[in-house]
Length: 437
Image 1 (cartoon, rainbow, N blue to C red):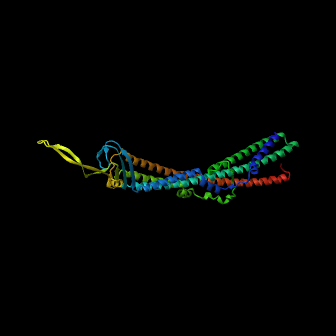
Image 2: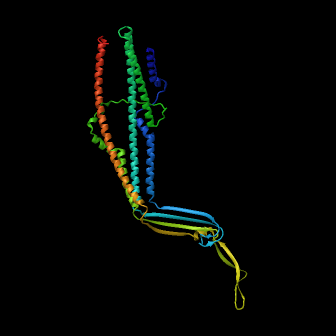
Image 3: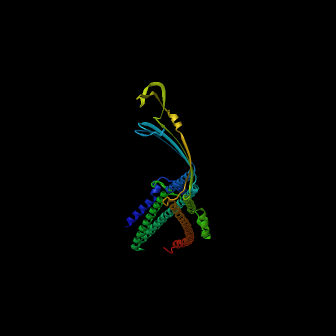
């Protein structure tokens, strides 16, 4: 039993010091460095940054929607059989090549202020996305700080476990010496050996907790889990930070309400939903627009006809009934001229300009449904804003209460520590005088 206890203690000491002896010195990470690195590299923050970029693109697109729309199209093909010639609008038999080119432009003059309200809606949505990004950065920073403090606590628990193991080992050595001298029974030795095994197990658990807390920090920082990492122990004197009980939670809530990204984001979403409702109601009004079109055509069989002075002969066209004389007409040589490509495009060039008025009468209740949907969305965003305010107030009051209680616990623990130190000093003096064991 004694040999097993000694081996376990040696193994435990080896586990605790192995990293420090075998590994090269590692650059330490302080709290500020951890927070800064997490804000720059955390995956959730990078994803939210992409959402903010999409919201910015949506705003730009809604602004560009005010510009006229321009479209151009062209087609080239070959026709076979009887069809309408695109240049002469006459039926022709045979095959020919054709080309068409058109262009159009459209400008919205009035559409119930849908474009303006959509721009305002997307602008507020962008501000809400940026506020959410700020809130996420604050949350990640708080999570990193919490994980960092947990690592500090776990690190201190290791030192406490080491001191407890050392104390138990000293007591075991003294008790074993007394047992060998016959002053104490062997039962006391067995009890302390069991206590040493329990303290060793607690120390191993403390080491495991510290390793787990370091892994949590690495995940938040998006670091390689196998990379070396060591926290930088801060030198903090809490005496100047214990005035929290003089701060009122209502004042803290008012300050937080003005700066928290979650609250500002919910307010922006409410305003964005209001603009979205106005944009949806704009679809119920008539829409006025102006449009223009241009186009031209070309066909390979578009030709002009002419006659030359060359007489080819005569062609009968009838007869006189009284004398049965044949009536003829002269036949001249026909000249065919194909119209050049550029001339056809110029001759067939056409333009058009129109003013269009669209009055919505019945469209399957789509416009009305969009209005109702916008109203429901507005009410939902208002509830979300109320819930954000309520959650923030609850968190402020809980944090204030926990901070005040922690200050009181710290004061009580400090007084207990002072009393324990005095008791230890008195016991040491009594021990030196041989008055106690």
